[in-house]
Length: 269
Image 1 (cartoon, rainbow, N blue to C red):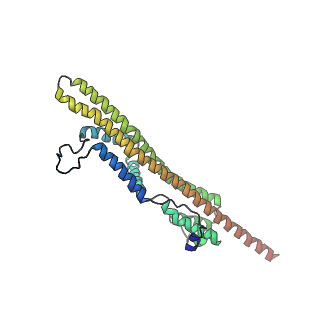
Image 2: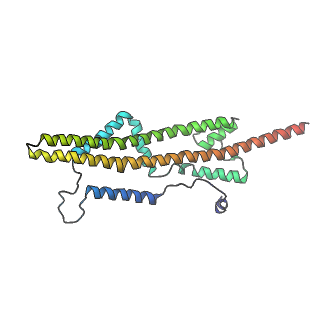
Image 3: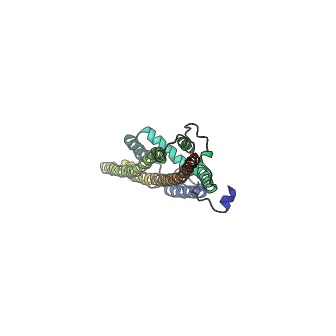
């Protein structure tokens, strides 16, 4: 196997988890947030104004409102599955789970071996390759196997697609709520002209809601949606490559079976 790799005979997806890029991107976004929030990190200075965004009313209006709108459009299960997909996207790429499988299939193709030797295939176990070999042993046609795998991939992809949709919705709702908070804050300013003590909190609501909405939409929801969308593309394309390899091996099995049948007929004659 290592010899085949060294001679570059194996061609498979090499898109793996890149921790350096991930750490750099998170660090860059964190630096942007720190610079926007205005954390005073100088020792010995007054800490009364450590955070610029210390308006809980504005924060709750935007964040709570965004979560409420998303839960109203989707459901709690979808929300948590999206959160789980986001967390997994920081651990590994979707191609990692089948990368070893791709290498096994490449080696089998190059050595001229049979796909039936890769797994037992005695029963359906949930492992994709094992289930395919089980269906081959059951004499299913390639078209039936392909339909099974396509349906299985599509069901997983649907969950991932809905997750991207939820994040994209959040990227639109958060800034919209920020603008709504700005309008409400300006109305409160106009209503408080006779009482200057109320103008400050009203202006804070007007400005902070816009800031929270912009940060949440531009620096949270949009990057996460883009990351998941990229992972979805990797997921689909990697499984296409997987099915191409399986197709080669299944058609080889069919040719060998036809050859055996032909030899038997010749022997009988």
